[in-house]
Length: 342
Ligand code: NAD
Ligand code: LMR
Image 1: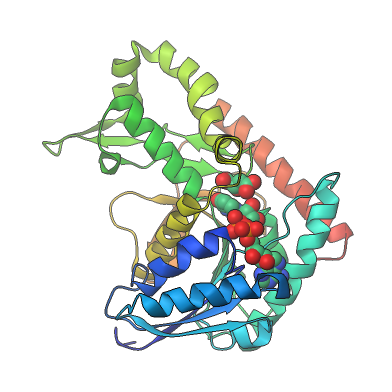
Image 2: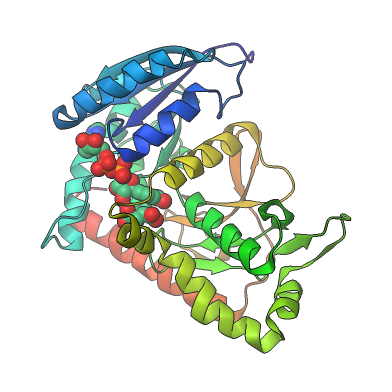
């Protein structure tokens, strides 16, 4: 494909907070590069249409060179027709008194039909990123309704958790974010997720590399202090950052979620170099995660496909945490199975 051939990107929930932070960056060329024209399709439900239409007007007013067209629709078949990248952001938020089963059931009614519409009309190379929560299991539901699309094209976002972890580490070590590589988010995009620094690498200004645990031991005053800091500060801070943002901001993360979605799709389309990153992808059984779950792994992107980084040693405490997060994913899967959603 020539760099100039237009790409179609569908964003659901386009009238919402994340949509507003996401669309302008896509239109400016942040995913495919400024030389590739983008056709945007904005999918909303009636309550969100006006907001999406307003966003479309503003997109026009930016006069982005890479923006080929913007279309707002409430018709999923139209929204996904010929789409190359589908960002499934719109989801049903948890309301008062709603149990997890109610939430999964409400989201099944969204992600099932959207998966079917992707199956019916998307481009052969379609790539899907689910952002709407519970993201991993919503991806599972959408994939189950798209039997003709390779299941590995359905992914869920843990890049925000990865970026949050990078930022916490950079702040603690007082180093640039870009100097830290090879950290991992395992499991579910929920409070059970497992931020793991054991394979992390720190690159100094002189290009010399050293293990991140060693750098942390030096900064915190010994290896024992690192273990305590990981357990009591770093892991809970990253895993509960979504709740912290909601508490402080009064609504859930939006610009940072949009930035992470851009990072995920850009790397998927254009490839990763150097460090791996984290994404929730279809498990092939790697690291003991049951096949068929959409779980976060260390991943590299090559030739437009995510590949799980193989061969990493996993310490017993990290493995136990991963098992806990995977159990939660299995429970969610079993619940949507019992509801007939997958
Ligand atoms: P929001 O409420 O501001 O916007 C959601 C939009 O989705 C609304 O405009 C709504 O009308 C629309 N919508 C609902 N059902 C739809 C459907 N069937 N089709 C199309 N549009 C539909 O919410 P937001 O802040 O933009 O967040 C969106 C989702 O992303 C939430 O589920 C949130 O929990 C999740 N989220 C995930 C991450 C992550 O890291 N994976 C991070 C932040 C937020
Ligand atoms: C986040 O990680 O910021 C969100 O998933 C939180 C939420 O519940 O919307």
